Image 1 (cartoon, rainbow, N blue to C red):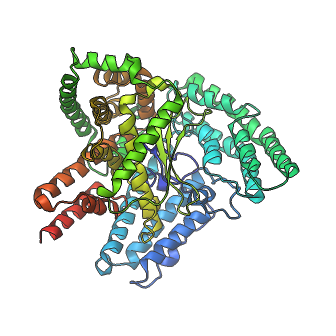
Image 2 (spheres, helix red, strand yellow):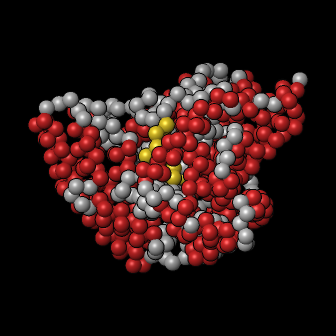
Image 3 (cartoon, rainbow, N blue to C red):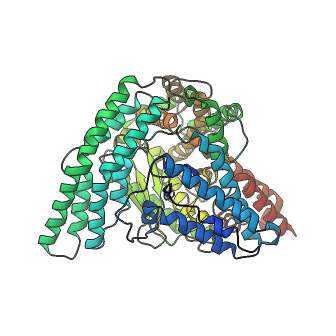
Length: 607
């Protein structure tokens, strides 16, 4: 469930290139003073190298994106800087993307390009169009919330992305600590402006944000602990290490700490007057905003009503499959009573974090051994599993994935939130590990990053319906691969799919049908086996992250439809490895493009 939303320090034009929230490296907003470099490309003769065109665009973005560079493993003179924020930067970055798309259209004829170049042309054009549709709503997003708020994402970036391999990189870390002060002040002012215009998050959100801030106001907070640990591993003398740590503490005390104090005061001020309705329908142009989000996340033209109805139908289907397993384990009672049994039975939960992580490790190793039977291409980057850091575990989501860096310096990482083990059922552990790790996000996104022949925007970008659809598809694929031998784990797999079906209902319920938080929570309690804490956290996620959760099942159903079509057409000639190669070798694409590619492959196989 890669659901990190890059809502801060990242341009709206690039918002939908990242996955949830997951997920791809945030590319920065460009300073307003920088002219789009794509204008020069417009003068290039038709037939010029398209790969070079996209490389220059990527270089232009990265030159304006210190954080984007760090995600890619690039550590240069900008390594100590944060991305520029503010509306001028948003506007300039949007102009850059749109000017590049216009230059591409005027300089290249898709009919004269190779098949893969024509696909890159189509994908960049589609992303620019999606971005243009979303751009008028750039103020609708929340800068501070419990899922992806700046208050926790900036420290998380320092801890998880900013590596310290030498003294210079330690100095850059300290520079970023000092830069947190003006950055947080700028974002706080922008959040206040948005709130005044009617774009504030619901009142309950502020409790989580304030909790994160309080955790980071401690002198020996997670950031100070992190740089101390990283500096401690350097091969320099003890006096220099002590000097660097002292400088970091001074930077926090003089800049970051006071900014967090000011941010706390601003969040409390906003909390006092925050709205109590949950859906984005309450915002100016909220209906159009939600429609644009649904179109972008699902890469379809489905309406909110159609998505809602699809969810209801899928919930009914999955409930039927669950009843079969309930009979298999000889449970006497209703499905809702079985749900209650799974929520409350101590045998369905680990008692220690170490035990949970050990089982994840065992399941992952068993899956990795089976992958070559179903995949031709496997990721080179390793996968690591980490518990979410203590400073943000109370507010963070249940699980998420972070892609590896292309230079090999950072592995793919599956983050699992073990704040409350009663929210992390044993029955779902397998499906969750397969979704976030292998054959799910880690396999797909590491392979994508390693497709060095693709333009950077395809290697590092994404389409949520494809990426999250693949993650959910992987949960069911694992059953085809011989896993879920315990019926309770298979029930957990169905529970995860049911969860995504219910998302279609509650996300559209909240943001289109004007359901309250409590109404949405009640729907999940009545229709899923998930623990109360899990349910409440999920609904709170959907409220601040409108539309994103609808992409999972819509994407999965399309991949399953295409696989079924291929199996019916090819019969004994169908091969999982080749089918998966067709799906993965393009990198993420919209669902209609994926369908076209698979249909073409089927026709080629038949002939």
